[in-house]
Length: 168
Image (cartoon, rainbow, N blue to C red; front, side, top):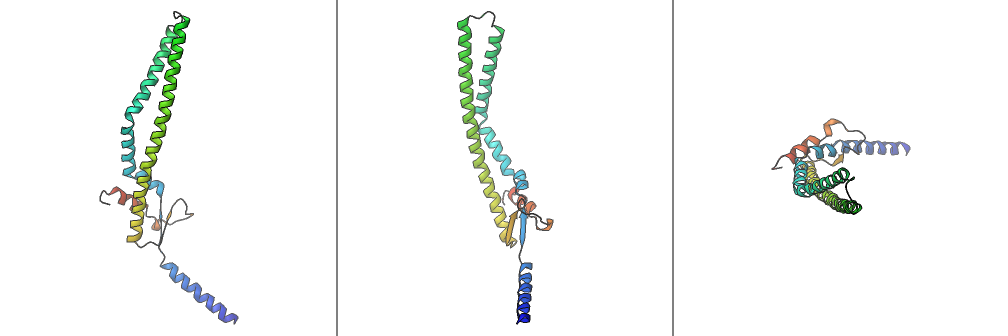
């Protein structure tokens, strides 16, 4: 009885080993793919262009504040109390306006960047799915979660090539 159980266990173990040999696993370095994705660079360029006018407004507001501070410092000995008060109010108004515009600007850039990154991530995911189907992978892991992976199962370069190909 014990001999029969050992023999059954050995046969099951051998069958699992044979089945595991047909199991295809791949890994992809998502950080490397993102850093080399032409879509991400193009998206960043679009965002920069889209927000350039608002960036220029912020720079101009900052310059106005610096000019007003320089004028106040330069003329402090000849200004009346009312003039100093007026400059202080102008500086506070400029500072409030700058802070508010900067806050909205940063929030809008963050939202736009997140949306663009999601589009690029979707394209990368589609490329990985396509490679998995074409090369008949059973499992593809992110390299970041794999403790060890031999270079032979790394499909990072294949993914980069696919997303870099406009027809891809």
